[in-house]
Amino acid sequence: MAPLAAPSDDQPPEDPSSVEQAPVEQPRDEQGDQQPTEAVDKPLLTLRDGLPPVIETEPALRDYCAALAAGSGPVAIDAERASGYRYSSRAYLIQLRREGAGTALVDPIAFVSLAPLQEALEGTEWILHAATQDLPCLAEVGLRPTILFDTELAGRLLGYPRVGLATLVETLLGFRLAKEHSAVDWSTRPLPEPWLDYAALDVEVLVELRDALAAELVAAGKDDWARQEFDALRGFEPAARVDAWRRTSGLHRVRGRRALGAVRALWETRDQIAEQRDVTPGRIIPDSAIVAAAQAMPADRGALLKTRGFHGRGAERYASRWVAALRDVQEMAEDDLPTRSPRGDGPPLPRAWAEKDPVAAKRLQLARAQMGVIAEQHGMPVENLLTPDYLRRTLWTPPRTREPGTLLDEIAAQLAAYGARSWQIGLAAPVLTSAVLEADAAPVHPQADGSPDDPSPEA
Image (tube, rainbow, N blue to C red; front, side, top):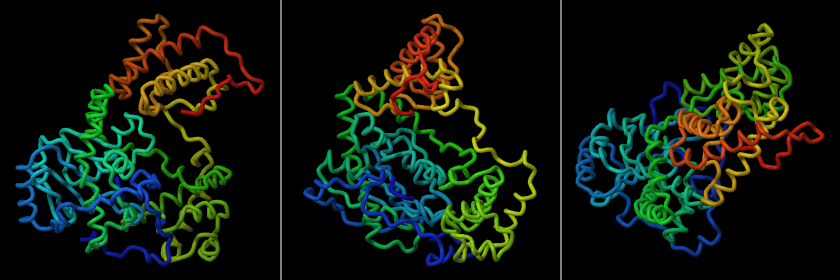
């Protein structure tokens, strides 16, 4: 949802005046949507019960947990992280609201354990917006849902073109939700009152929003689909990034395996420093500095600090580590250096299918076209109809059989093994079966460049 006593560090974070700063965002909701222009005509949402004090003592937590357990209906939950400021994704504030219990702002940093809160929440339905953003940091402090409703995902299933919290609240409930504090440093202590007011508003009408969306899901015949999606979310864990250094901005400008190795070495060194200091890596040195150093390969401290981007305390304080990382790369054997394309267990990028396997490329073309039609019929994004990676994996390595009934069953089983839900399998498996049979039976007619005709965008 919105970006996530300050954690005790043996050293303070980098001096903000000498490192790359987190961007100052214009008012947007948590999905990056700018608030609609017409929203200015809507009344600004305010707290109906006023701003509650932050819960940061055991007695205060026990009192609210008792009220929470005695309340009724689902519980609206949100968490604030210090994205753009801290390395970790820990929760620095947890907001809750339930009928009969009111709103609570809990400081998780103040407690050794939030077990009383988990006990009070046991068996209740949690309402979150964009649950995958908050579930990991809530699980980190011992809070895990048994029942879940995700208002952002519900909006996607219903075909809303913009599903940020502010947009849905304005569209369905008629209130304007201010988002001017969405990019602040939530590890700050004490938290300013305007920030707390903003945080409390994120759960103020989440129950009402859930009820409106739930009614629409029932009317659209998608309530069972939504329940399957929400149940799958309960065990969500973020995927481990393989070769995360390859996401370095500007990597496409780096040429040669040794320069790629320099990017990897500098990125990993920066990541280690950032984790140790609990600051976001870009506040040590920016990606642009890593790319510039990989291209120039400076051999000593003086040359390094003359490289574009290597300025400020982060560059100077750790100069010996940057230089050592680059020297290690210079001494590496060629076979130990990274290649341009990462090694993976999945299929190649779709643009390479025509060259590597024209029949598979035809399968993909046929399936994409039909999946787009079905997504439009059901009024939802095609990526919610079936995860694109599941589609590509199935079409790149489909089952061997070409007996239609058996092929359908085996494709359904393959999709289920990847993690597709039963409603998705029911819609997608026949399409993928048809694509496999048709592509394998028909000759592929390449264009002049040798690729099959496929005007559809990459999924």
